Image (cartoon, rainbow, N blue to C red; front, side, top):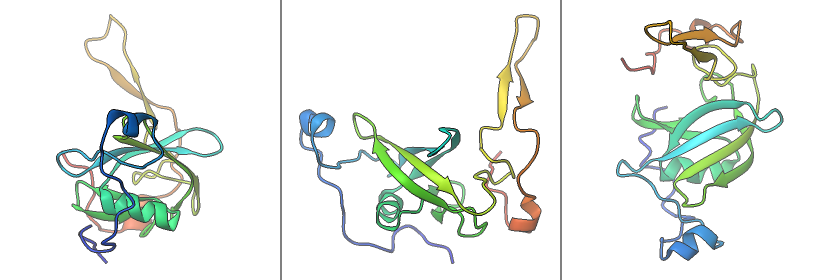
Length: 166
């Protein structure tokens, strides 16, 4: 079921941003969402430290993540709330949530359930390629650092629209 991100909770865990000292040194959660109502979220594997993905959260996604202990994001391409693994079964169970110094970025440390993957393309991590360049090349190239997919996306997602936007 699609969720517009507007339903759900009408409460807020979040404090108003009152002072730099409160934001940087205080004990209140006062995240700064951007002009689109989003905050950047880096997600890593809790045990290996591997970067799994970069996503975005709106207030509802961050609230649901805190309450449920499972990662929720805001899909910019689909314009809807997204419970990670809700379709694929690749649930991200939150071990720890951190927020950066000025509270405009979130870091989730997670453990994976299901096929141990976080990428809709089928790889374990969304960061499955490395950038290569030397002065003899006219342009950088990409090399795969993950040599195989963990799952076949067509088996999981069928004919659902690809979230990658050209």
